[in-house]
Image 1 (cartoon, rainbow, N blue to C red):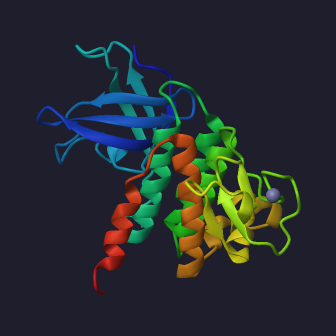
Image 2 (image 1 turned 180 degrees about the horizontal axis):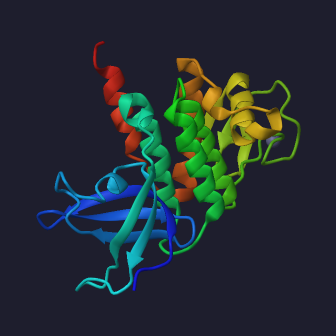
Length: 255
Ligand SMILES: [Zn+2]
């Protein structure tokens, strides 16, 4: 018996057998779900588009399962492929970062509709964004906030005092921004006032009436924001995402 309809985003895929894939989807209804997709590596396969990275689809899983107990992808209807994410290598790398974080952060089979909606909106925004960095960093901050790690950005997370013009660090172990003198130097990264301002906007864009997909950052600002976001990710997800290595390779290549 196939399952009821699931709204799904493709997070990850790996090859199995000669023509098949194991595809990890984030479904709105059932959380993260790995499915055996039969025959989808054939050019003519009906469900191939659904198994492309970032694809949004309505799927059904066959609950009978294969020999290893994994359910199979039965019916699937593609809703959106987000072609803009594949046209530009930098945008693709930032989109892959958002998807990788989601995969790292969520356990299998636990519905997180708020995360699903945020990832879907982020990919849709990035599809036509000039720059992937702001929407991706905003996604990372909001994903971790939904999971219980909202950073303190309006005062010192260590002593509670005002930050004012004093030198500050982003210290994920302390819970957010701290006075530089109170930072744990192993995890904390120094932040400029411009980075502090950007982090506040990216964490709560709606409070500022901003769409993260419409924001662009200078190279210097992006590097500062990225360092703080990655420190936050490493501290709470205990993992270093690999997707941004692609971005660094692209930028080292002469134009
Ligand atoms: Zn302090």
